[in-house]
Length: 247
Length: 247
Image (cartoon, rainbow over all chains, first blue to last red):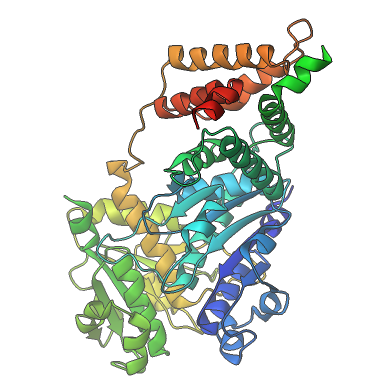
């Protein structure tokens, strides 16, 4: 696949953006780096003349931007997603550098749609939103002032994506059939309900059990077959007697 | 020399900037990446409230910005300088990537003042100005639309400078306590026996089930705590009634 086609498979998702100028500046950043898919989750003001002005000659990206009502809707159909967040926190997903995240995104984008998710200007992404992604990535900023403008952060990330896409085109291992966002979330839901039913997970004192399990499985980039096997195991273990009766 | 001191030796020079908002956004970019020296050659409007606004909480960089009447004055005392320019042209200086330029700048900035020079928003740097520098560096942009906003370009370059300055320190993430070979094998043994007992794994026709599960979990480099959680889940799921009786 050509670098252009790979970059065309990468969605940039902006959540709850307050300032339309930042949406325009992000659109310009996308176009300069050869990306085209901008997805806006509940933007406060869009469309807006300030977005058009800051987009300069990248208005085609704005015109084709998709507006969604939720992050789940924005991630529908993706096979891999990375949350951008500077804040350190208790999270379920592994944290990596921008460069590492870009390499993984580009590797998968050669064959599947992927997404890179940015939060609101003042509050960033919610922990719930970060946990919907497979990885979290941060720009290694000055610890005394780590607040990059959101469009500036988009420029840095998309620059790293372009660098990764242009670097050797050796895709590494043969592409597997990766599980989709919905498949993986379906597995986590099944796991959580099974652990609740059997009493391993105490719903009133869940501690960090589900975040830890999400972190473990998010590191693996689950494949479709694997999700099916894991769900089969859950089903059998939760109902072992049925099997026994058939014998 | 510490990364902070090295980055403190790097001047960012903006020539003939038209929009004060870009000066403010550049100041913010500098501060987020741990740089502090902003030099302005004949800015059209400075100081200006829009620069203050776009600088967000990086106004200290603006307050300390030095205004010069010429690029020669801005480069005085530096030992090395890089011009940022996307335009290909007849130039006297070698052209390199941003990453390569950042590595060279940081290397020299450990012991001497250096500078990175950006041009005007619409016309860029003059050939005369480029020729005053030792290298010219470009961000590898989309050939159909290569016009990065000047503050966005400053963000990308300063990001690469910070990455280069930090590279020796290999920050990485805190090492986890990885599970030993025995721990992981113990888990696989426990998994296999549980799957056999419950009937999910047919010992006479095992197919590829265990190899597939091994492949999945081997990709993750399991941690000790995770092995304990997984074995706890197996134990509970295989004996759900015991839990139920305790309630």
